Image (cartoon, rainbow, N blue to C red; front, side):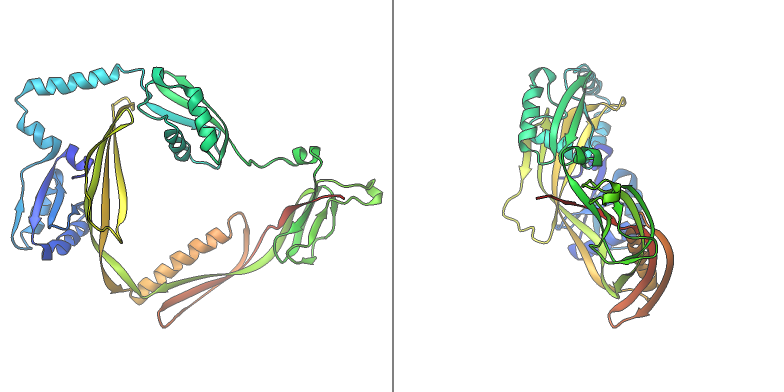
Length: 389
C-alpha cells in the first residue's frame, strides 16, 4: 500500500531486479528524490520525479515504469466525466456544513506536558477530532481522563463553534516558598556540588557561608534556623547562591560506522478512520519484522480554511534501512567530534556563565577523542526541607 501523499499527488511504480534495488534507491536519494521501496523489487516514485528517475534507471539495466497511478491518475482518466467531479465537490461542500463536528482541539494551562500528550489522553478517553458535539458528554470525558491520567489533576472542555478548548491543571506543580511556609514547613538551602562561593543573596534565613569560601556538596549555605539575634525560631530559607566550579566534557567518535544507502518499507496494515471509527483495510500476518522500525503514517484531510475533515488514513509500515560498513576520514572524525563536544558543552553550561575553557583532542585506536576542561559559575543552592520534633 502506497503512502497517502503519493496517492494524492500521483506516483509511478518501478519494477527492477532485486540485486539492483539498493543501488537504485541510493542513487535516487543522492539525486534528491524521495522514493520508497519494497523487498520484492518494487520502487514507488512521485509523479513529478518520474522523469529524473527514468534518467537514472536507464543506467541500471532493465526496468518497468508504470503509467501515472493514484488520485491524480484517476482524475486524468476520468477528466471528461463531469458527474464524478461534481460529486466530489458536493461531498466537500457537505462536510463544510457539518458544524456539529469537532474540527480542532486546543490546549492551555499545560507547562510541562505537551499539547500532543494531552490530546492523546483525551483521545484515549473517547474525545478528539471527529466527535459529534451533540453525542458527546464532556463531563463524562473529563471524569474518564482524570481517572486515567498521572499528570493532570483538573480538566475542563469548552466548545467554541467547532473547536474544543481544553483547560488543564497539572499535578505536582512547584509550590511557592510562601505556600510552603504557610503550611508549616522549614528548610535549609544546601550546596549541589563542590565549588567556591562567588555571590550570595539571602531573602529569608541565615547565611552560613561568605564569598570566597570553599564548600562541598551537601553543605548548608543558608540555614532555616534563625539565630537569637534575629529573634530565633525556624523558617523556610530562601535565597540565591552562585558558585564557581570546574568540569570535563568528553566526546568520542568511532572511525567505523554504518552508512545508510537506502530504505525498504513494507506496508503491513492500513485503516480509514471516519469520525474516529476505524475501518481496517488490510493487515499482513506471518511475517517477521524483527529489526524493523514500525511507523504509523497518519494523514488527516484539511480544507483551505484550515479546518480538518473527520476523515483520516492510517498506514502502518515496517521500515528497514539498507546499510554498509564505512570509515570516517580524519577530517570527518575531527569535525564530528567538534560538533558533539560543542553540543555537550552547551548542554552542560545551560543557565551557567563560562569563565574559562581549554580543549584537547587526539586520535585513538578506534577513532578520535576530544575533551574540554571548563570553569564556570552557576547557581549551586537547592532547597532541603527538615522537620522539628
